[in-house]
Amino acid sequence: EKGGFDHFMLKEIHEQPKAITDTFRGRMLVEENMIKMSSIDDNLDKFLNANRIIIIACGTSWHAGLVGEYLFEDMARIPVEVEYASEFRYRNPIITNKDVVIAISQSGETADTLAAIKLAKSKGAFVYGVCNVVGSSIARETHSGAYTHAGPEIGVASTKAFTTQITVLTLIALKLGKANGSLADHTFKDYLKKMQLIPRQVEKLLKIDEHVKSIAAVYKDATNCLYLGRGFNFPVALEGALKLKEISYIHAEGYPAAEMKHGPIALIDENMPIFVIATNRGHYEKVVSNIQEIKSRAGKIIAVVTEGDTQVREIADHVIEVPDTEEALTPLLTTIPLQLLSYHIAVMLGKNVDQPRNLAKSVTVE
Ligand code: F6R
View 1 (cartoon, rainbow, N blue to C red):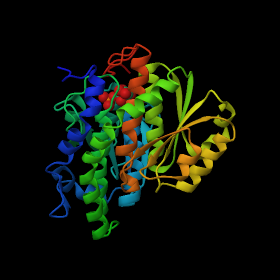
View 2 (view 1 turned 90 degrees about the vertical axis):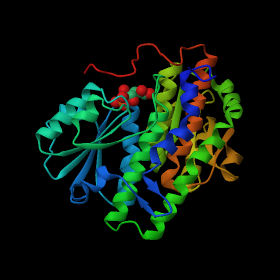
View 3 (view 1 turned 30 degrees about the vertical axis):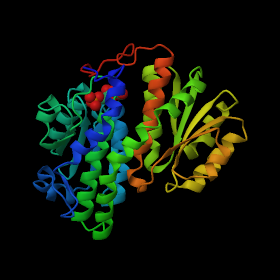
View 4 (view 1 turned 180 degrees about the horizontal axis):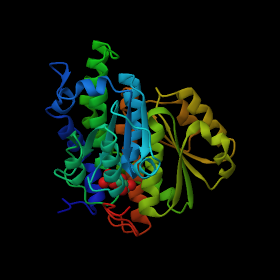
Protein backbone atom coordinates (compact mmCIF):
# COMPACT_ATOMS: atom_id res chain seq x y z
CA GLU A 1 0.00 0.00 0.00
CA LYS A 2 2.97 2.33 0.52
CA GLY A 3 4.15 1.45 -2.98
CA GLY A 4 7.63 0.45 -1.86
CA PHE A 5 8.18 3.58 0.25
CA ASP A 6 8.87 3.41 3.98
CA HIS A 7 6.13 5.91 4.78
CA PHE A 8 3.00 7.33 3.22
CA MET A 9 4.50 10.79 3.51
CA LEU A 10 7.45 9.87 1.33
CA LYS A 11 5.18 8.13 -1.15
CA GLU A 12 2.97 11.20 -1.31
CA ILE A 13 5.94 13.54 -1.76
CA HIS A 14 6.97 11.38 -4.70
CA GLU A 15 3.48 11.37 -6.15
CA GLN A 16 3.56 15.12 -6.70
CA PRO A 17 4.58 15.10 -10.37
CA LYS A 18 1.56 12.93 -11.11
CA ALA A 19 -0.74 14.77 -8.69
CA ILE A 20 0.08 18.15 -10.26
CA THR A 21 -0.34 16.72 -13.76
CA ASP A 22 -3.67 15.16 -12.83
CA THR A 23 -4.79 18.48 -11.40
CA PHE A 24 -4.14 20.47 -14.58
CA ARG A 25 -5.00 17.71 -17.05
CA GLY A 26 -8.10 18.57 -19.08
CA ARG A 27 -8.08 22.08 -17.64
CA MET A 28 -4.89 23.60 -18.99
CA LEU A 29 -5.01 23.36 -22.78
CA VAL A 30 -1.64 24.61 -23.94
CA GLU A 31 -2.24 24.16 -27.69
CA GLU A 32 -5.52 26.05 -27.54
CA ASN A 33 -3.94 28.64 -25.24
CA MET A 34 -6.79 28.37 -22.78
CA ILE A 35 -7.80 27.15 -19.35
CA LYS A 36 -11.03 25.24 -19.28
CA MET A 37 -12.80 25.24 -15.93
CA SER A 38 -16.56 25.23 -16.18
CA SER A 39 -16.89 26.10 -12.49
CA ILE A 40 -15.17 29.41 -13.26
CA ASP A 41 -16.83 30.01 -16.63
CA ASP A 42 -20.28 29.42 -15.15
CA ASN A 43 -19.60 32.04 -12.47
CA LEU A 44 -17.29 34.35 -14.37
CA ASP A 45 -19.34 37.48 -13.72
CA LYS A 46 -19.18 36.84 -9.98
CA PHE A 47 -15.39 36.58 -10.04
CA LEU A 48 -14.86 39.50 -12.40
CA ASN A 49 -17.26 41.81 -10.57
CA ALA A 50 -16.08 40.84 -7.11
CA ASN A 51 -14.94 43.65 -4.83
CA ARG A 52 -12.40 41.23 -3.46
CA ILE A 53 -11.72 37.57 -2.97
CA ILE A 54 -11.55 36.27 0.58
CA ILE A 55 -9.68 33.00 0.99
CA ILE A 56 -10.46 30.96 4.10
CA ALA A 57 -8.63 27.84 5.26
CA CYS A 58 -6.61 26.31 8.10
CA GLY A 59 -3.05 25.03 8.44
CA THR A 60 -1.28 24.01 5.26
CA SER A 61 -4.34 24.91 3.20
CA TRP A 62 -4.11 28.44 4.62
CA HIS A 63 -0.49 28.57 3.39
CA ALA A 64 -1.71 27.59 -0.08
CA GLY A 65 -4.23 30.41 0.26
CA LEU A 66 -1.42 32.86 0.94
CA VAL A 67 0.30 31.77 -2.26
CA GLY A 68 -3.12 32.28 -3.88
CA GLU A 69 -3.15 35.88 -2.66
CA TYR A 70 0.09 36.61 -4.48
CA LEU A 71 -1.15 34.76 -7.58
CA PHE A 72 -4.55 36.49 -7.83
CA GLU A 73 -3.14 39.93 -7.17
CA ASP A 74 -0.25 39.49 -9.56
CA MET A 75 -2.04 37.78 -12.42
CA ALA A 76 -5.63 39.03 -12.17
CA ARG A 77 -5.19 42.27 -10.17
CA ILE A 78 -8.06 41.33 -7.85
CA PRO A 79 -7.63 42.29 -4.18
CA VAL A 80 -7.41 39.28 -1.91
CA GLU A 81 -7.60 38.68 1.82
CA VAL A 82 -6.53 35.42 3.35
CA GLU A 83 -8.05 34.46 6.66
CA TYR A 84 -7.77 31.65 9.13
CA ALA A 85 -11.26 30.17 9.06
CA SER A 86 -11.29 30.12 12.86
CA GLU A 87 -10.56 33.85 13.14
CA PHE A 88 -12.85 34.87 10.30
CA ARG A 89 -15.92 33.20 11.70
CA TYR A 90 -15.71 34.65 15.18
CA ARG A 91 -15.09 38.22 14.12
CA ASN A 92 -18.47 39.26 12.75
CA PRO A 93 -16.71 39.70 9.39
CA ILE A 94 -17.82 42.29 6.86
CA ILE A 95 -19.00 40.31 3.86
CA THR A 96 -21.51 41.18 1.18
CA ASN A 97 -22.89 39.66 -1.97
CA LYS A 98 -20.10 41.46 -3.86
CA ASP A 99 -17.51 39.22 -2.22
CA VAL A 100 -16.26 35.90 -3.50
CA VAL A 101 -15.04 33.48 -0.87
CA ILE A 102 -12.69 30.66 -1.76
CA ALA A 103 -12.49 27.91 0.85
CA ILE A 104 -9.52 25.56 0.63
CA SER A 105 -9.49 22.18 2.34
CA GLN A 106 -7.83 18.86 1.60
CA SER A 107 -10.22 16.78 3.68
CA GLY A 108 -13.28 18.93 3.07
CA GLU A 109 -14.23 18.23 6.69
CA THR A 110 -12.39 20.89 8.73
CA ALA A 111 -14.98 22.17 11.19
CA ASP A 112 -13.85 25.80 11.31
CA THR A 113 -13.65 26.07 7.53
CA LEU A 114 -17.08 24.54 7.16
CA ALA A 115 -18.59 26.94 9.73
CA ALA A 116 -16.90 29.92 8.02
CA ILE A 117 -18.44 28.87 4.70
CA LYS A 118 -21.91 28.74 6.23
CA LEU A 119 -21.41 32.20 7.70
CA ALA A 120 -20.22 33.66 4.38
CA LYS A 121 -23.18 32.10 2.59
CA SER A 122 -25.61 33.54 5.12
CA LYS A 123 -24.24 37.01 4.30
CA GLY A 124 -24.81 36.50 0.60
CA ALA A 125 -21.27 35.77 -0.61
CA PHE A 126 -20.59 33.38 -3.43
CA VAL A 127 -18.50 30.53 -2.02
CA TYR A 128 -16.15 28.47 -4.15
CA GLY A 129 -14.42 25.36 -2.78
CA VAL A 130 -11.02 23.88 -3.50
CA CYS A 131 -11.15 20.39 -1.97
CA ASN A 132 -9.38 17.11 -2.47
CA VAL A 133 -11.92 14.68 -1.06
CA VAL A 134 -14.78 14.20 -3.50
CA GLY A 135 -18.23 14.56 -1.99
CA SER A 136 -16.84 15.90 1.31
CA SER A 137 -18.89 18.24 3.49
CA ILE A 138 -17.11 21.38 2.20
CA ALA A 139 -17.44 20.24 -1.41
CA ARG A 140 -21.17 19.87 -0.84
CA GLU A 141 -21.64 23.08 1.15
CA THR A 142 -19.97 25.41 -1.40
CA HIS A 143 -21.83 26.89 -4.38
CA SER A 144 -19.24 25.67 -6.84
CA GLY A 145 -15.63 24.61 -6.86
CA ALA A 146 -12.74 22.67 -8.33
CA TYR A 147 -11.20 19.50 -6.99
CA THR A 148 -7.50 19.01 -6.55
CA HIS A 149 -6.71 15.64 -8.06
CA ALA A 150 -4.05 14.66 -5.55
CA GLY A 151 -5.52 11.25 -4.79
CA PRO A 152 -5.85 10.04 -1.20
CA GLU A 153 -3.47 11.73 1.22
CA ILE A 154 -2.85 9.39 4.16
CA GLY A 155 0.18 10.95 5.87
CA VAL A 156 -1.02 13.45 8.44
CA ALA A 157 1.48 16.05 7.23
CA SER A 158 0.04 17.51 4.08
CA THR A 159 2.31 17.43 1.02
CA LYS A 160 0.72 16.71 -2.35
CA ALA A 161 -2.50 18.40 -1.23
CA PHE A 162 -0.53 21.65 -0.82
CA THR A 163 1.10 21.62 -4.25
CA THR A 164 -2.13 20.64 -6.00
CA GLN A 165 -4.02 23.41 -4.17
CA ILE A 166 -1.44 25.86 -5.49
CA THR A 167 -1.90 24.33 -8.94
CA VAL A 168 -5.66 24.94 -8.90
CA LEU A 169 -5.21 28.48 -7.58
CA THR A 170 -2.67 29.18 -10.33
CA LEU A 171 -5.10 27.98 -13.00
CA ILE A 172 -7.88 30.17 -11.61
CA ALA A 173 -5.61 33.23 -11.33
CA LEU A 174 -4.39 32.76 -14.90
CA LYS A 175 -7.90 32.26 -16.20
CA LEU A 176 -9.22 35.37 -14.45
CA GLY A 177 -6.17 37.37 -15.49
CA LYS A 178 -6.81 36.48 -19.10
CA ALA A 179 -10.55 37.11 -18.82
CA ASN A 180 -10.21 40.59 -17.32
CA GLY A 181 -7.31 41.62 -19.51
CA SER A 182 -4.70 41.85 -16.74
CA LEU A 183 -2.53 39.26 -18.47
CA ALA A 184 -1.32 39.86 -22.00
CA ASP A 185 -1.96 36.96 -24.35
CA HIS A 186 1.72 36.12 -24.73
CA THR A 187 2.29 36.25 -20.96
CA PHE A 188 -0.61 33.87 -20.42
CA LYS A 189 0.77 31.53 -23.06
CA ASP A 190 4.21 31.65 -21.52
CA TYR A 191 2.79 30.72 -18.10
CA LEU A 192 1.00 27.71 -19.56
CA LYS A 193 4.21 26.51 -21.15
CA LYS A 194 6.15 26.97 -17.93
CA MET A 195 3.39 25.31 -15.92
CA GLN A 196 3.51 22.31 -18.21
CA LEU A 197 7.19 21.84 -17.33
CA ILE A 198 6.58 21.80 -13.57
CA PRO A 199 5.88 18.06 -13.09
CA ARG A 200 9.15 17.16 -14.83
CA GLN A 201 11.00 19.73 -12.77
CA VAL A 202 9.52 18.31 -9.56
CA GLU A 203 10.63 14.86 -10.71
CA LYS A 204 14.13 16.19 -11.18
CA LEU A 205 14.06 17.70 -7.68
CA LEU A 206 13.01 14.40 -6.14
CA LYS A 207 16.25 12.95 -7.46
CA ILE A 208 18.36 15.17 -5.19
CA ASP A 209 16.92 13.37 -2.19
CA GLU A 210 20.32 12.07 -1.07
CA HIS A 211 21.73 15.59 -1.03
CA VAL A 212 18.80 16.83 1.06
CA LYS A 213 19.23 13.84 3.36
CA SER A 214 22.88 14.72 3.93
CA ILE A 215 21.81 18.22 4.99
CA ALA A 216 19.15 16.72 7.27
CA ALA A 217 21.87 14.68 8.97
CA VAL A 218 23.81 17.84 9.81
CA TYR A 219 20.88 19.71 11.38
CA LYS A 220 18.71 16.96 12.87
CA ASP A 221 19.69 17.84 16.45
CA ALA A 222 18.83 21.52 16.17
CA THR A 223 16.23 22.69 18.67
CA ASN A 224 15.16 25.81 16.76
CA CYS A 225 15.10 26.69 13.09
CA LEU A 226 14.09 29.70 11.03
CA TYR A 227 12.63 29.62 7.54
CA LEU A 228 12.80 32.77 5.46
CA GLY A 229 11.32 33.71 2.10
CA ARG A 230 9.94 36.73 0.33
CA GLY A 231 7.00 37.31 -2.01
CA PHE A 232 5.62 34.10 -3.45
CA ASN A 233 8.03 32.15 -1.26
CA PHE A 234 7.07 33.72 2.05
CA PRO A 235 4.18 31.23 2.41
CA VAL A 236 6.59 28.45 1.43
CA ALA A 237 8.77 29.45 4.39
CA LEU A 238 5.73 29.18 6.68
CA GLU A 239 4.91 25.78 5.24
CA GLY A 240 8.50 24.56 5.55
CA ALA A 241 8.49 25.49 9.24
CA LEU A 242 5.11 23.84 9.82
CA LYS A 243 6.29 20.58 8.24
CA LEU A 244 9.34 20.49 10.49
CA LYS A 245 7.32 21.23 13.65
CA GLU A 246 4.64 18.68 12.88
CA ILE A 247 6.71 15.61 12.26
CA SER A 248 10.07 16.18 13.95
CA TYR A 249 8.84 18.26 16.93
CA ILE A 250 11.64 20.75 16.35
CA HIS A 251 10.55 24.30 16.97
CA ALA A 252 10.60 26.29 13.75
CA GLU A 253 9.27 29.63 12.58
CA GLY A 254 8.68 30.98 9.11
CA TYR A 255 9.15 34.68 8.44
CA PRO A 256 9.17 37.07 5.53
CA ALA A 257 12.94 37.47 5.10
CA ALA A 258 12.88 41.23 5.63
CA GLU A 259 11.06 40.88 8.97
CA MET A 260 14.08 39.09 10.40
CA LYS A 261 15.72 42.31 11.47
CA HIS A 262 12.59 43.33 13.37
CA GLY A 263 13.06 40.66 16.01
CA PRO A 264 14.03 37.11 15.14
CA ILE A 265 17.57 38.19 14.28
CA ALA A 266 18.15 38.25 18.05
CA LEU A 267 17.88 34.45 18.03
CA ILE A 268 20.69 33.91 15.57
CA ASP A 269 23.89 32.29 16.76
CA GLU A 270 26.16 29.53 15.49
CA ASN A 271 23.64 26.87 16.56
CA MET A 272 20.74 28.24 14.56
CA PRO A 273 20.01 26.73 11.14
CA ILE A 274 18.24 29.15 8.83
CA PHE A 275 16.59 27.92 5.67
CA VAL A 276 16.36 30.69 3.12
CA ILE A 277 14.51 30.55 -0.16
CA ALA A 278 16.59 32.64 -2.52
CA THR A 279 15.49 31.90 -6.07
CA ASN A 280 16.87 34.33 -8.57
CA ARG A 281 13.76 36.23 -9.63
CA GLY A 282 12.04 37.09 -6.38
CA HIS A 283 13.75 40.10 -4.83
CA TYR A 284 17.01 38.24 -5.17
CA GLU A 285 19.39 41.04 -4.20
CA LYS A 286 17.32 41.77 -1.10
CA VAL A 287 17.43 38.15 -0.02
CA VAL A 288 21.17 38.03 -0.62
CA SER A 289 21.60 40.94 1.76
CA ASN A 290 19.39 39.16 4.33
CA ILE A 291 21.68 36.14 3.99
CA GLN A 292 24.71 38.34 4.58
CA GLU A 293 23.11 39.65 7.77
CA ILE A 294 22.69 36.07 8.99
CA LYS A 295 26.21 35.18 7.99
CA SER A 296 27.70 38.03 9.95
CA ARG A 297 25.96 36.65 13.07
CA ALA A 298 27.38 33.18 12.45
CA GLY A 299 23.99 31.55 11.68
CA LYS A 300 24.04 28.41 9.56
CA ILE A 301 22.56 29.06 6.13
CA ILE A 302 20.85 26.47 4.01
CA ALA A 303 19.68 28.21 0.85
CA VAL A 304 17.23 27.06 -1.79
CA VAL A 305 18.52 28.67 -4.98
CA THR A 306 17.94 28.61 -8.72
CA GLU A 307 20.10 26.19 -10.70
CA GLY A 308 23.42 27.76 -11.60
CA ASP A 309 23.36 30.33 -8.80
CA THR A 310 26.83 31.46 -7.78
CA GLN A 311 26.28 34.48 -5.53
CA VAL A 312 24.42 32.73 -2.70
CA ARG A 313 26.56 29.62 -3.03
CA GLU A 314 29.55 31.69 -1.96
CA ILE A 315 27.96 32.71 1.34
CA ALA A 316 25.67 29.80 2.27
CA ASP A 317 26.75 26.71 4.19
CA HIS A 318 24.63 24.50 1.94
CA VAL A 319 22.67 25.12 -1.21
CA ILE A 320 19.80 23.18 -2.73
CA GLU A 321 19.17 23.97 -6.38
CA VAL A 322 15.74 24.12 -7.97
CA PRO A 323 15.11 24.39 -11.73
CA ASP A 324 14.35 27.79 -13.23
CA THR A 325 10.76 28.87 -13.76
CA GLU A 326 8.60 31.99 -13.54
CA GLU A 327 8.70 33.53 -10.08
CA ALA A 328 4.96 32.94 -9.60
CA LEU A 329 5.46 29.22 -10.13
CA THR A 330 8.49 28.77 -7.87
CA PRO A 331 6.46 27.67 -4.79
CA LEU A 332 5.65 24.43 -6.63
CA LEU A 333 9.40 23.71 -6.73
CA THR A 334 10.85 25.30 -3.59
CA THR A 335 8.36 23.40 -1.42
CA ILE A 336 9.70 19.99 -2.45
CA PRO A 337 13.17 20.02 -0.83
CA LEU A 338 11.67 21.45 2.37
CA GLN A 339 9.22 18.54 2.53
CA LEU A 340 12.05 16.06 2.01
CA LEU A 341 14.19 17.75 4.61
CA SER A 342 11.50 17.52 7.31
CA TYR A 343 10.81 13.95 6.35
CA HIS A 344 14.44 12.88 6.70
CA ILE A 345 14.96 14.71 9.97
CA ALA A 346 11.86 13.07 11.47
CA VAL A 347 12.99 9.62 10.32
CA MET A 348 16.50 10.18 11.70
CA LEU A 349 14.99 11.21 15.04
CA GLY A 350 12.84 8.07 15.08
CA LYS A 351 9.54 9.95 15.04
CA ASN A 352 6.24 8.59 13.78
CA VAL A 353 6.26 10.38 10.45
CA ASP A 354 2.83 9.39 9.21
CA GLN A 355 1.02 9.83 12.50
CA PRO A 356 2.69 12.53 14.55
CA ARG A 357 1.61 12.85 18.15
CA ASN A 358 -1.44 14.96 18.97
CA LEU A 359 -2.41 15.46 15.32
CA ALA A 360 -5.35 14.15 13.31
CA LYS A 361 -5.75 14.05 9.55
CA SER A 362 -8.93 16.02 9.65
CA VAL A 363 -9.81 18.40 12.40
CA THR A 364 -13.54 18.02 12.83
CA VAL A 365 -13.65 19.74 16.21
CA GLU A 366 -13.74 23.51 16.49
C1 F6R B 1 -0.53 20.25 7.97
C2 F6R B 1 -1.89 19.76 8.10
C3 F6R B 1 -2.95 20.65 8.71
C4 F6R B 1 -4.09 20.81 7.69
C5 F6R B 1 -5.25 21.58 8.31
C6 F6R B 1 -6.35 21.83 7.30
O1 F6R B 1 0.31 19.31 7.44
O2 F6R B 1 -2.18 18.67 7.68
O3 F6R B 1 -2.42 21.89 9.05
O4 F6R B 1 -3.59 21.44 6.56
O5 F6R B 1 -5.76 20.87 9.39
O6 F6R B 1 -6.88 20.65 6.81
P1 F6R B 1 -7.78 20.61 5.53
O7 F6R B 1 -6.98 21.03 4.38
O8 F6R B 1 -8.22 19.17 5.42
O9 F6R B 1 -8.94 21.52 5.78
